[in-house]
Image 1: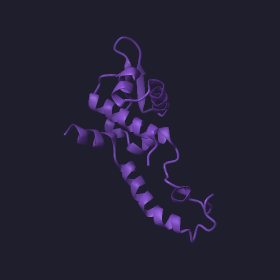
Image 2 (image 1 turned 120 degrees about the horizontal axis):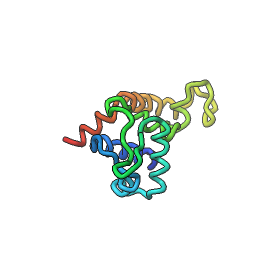
Image 3 (image 1 turned 90 degrees about the vertical axis):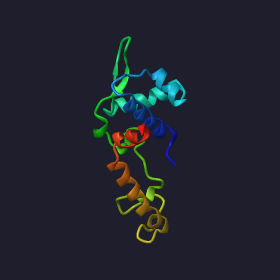
Length: 138
């Protein structure tokens, strides 16, 4: 299951992609996302540090996408919020060691989860913000 902060981040980015060039304040985004404002501000700050959002000050200020929605991959959003996207340490372990496994070669958990994890990562890597936001507009 995705952490709530990752879900909020993806939803905020979809919200801004659908909204076009109109910036939205943190307060408006928190209300629309039904998230506590302080909690969402932390997420917005992480997205900004990752270069996915920009902020404008002033009367018409707020947050807006830093790049075109076609140039923002879903994995970029997720990674900006939570670097550990694997459901278990095993599927993401590229080395010969895993803190959970006694033997990586015979680990049944890794054997079961790794193929699905790879498909999921490929999907998140190949899907853009434009892909999912344009599906929602339809």
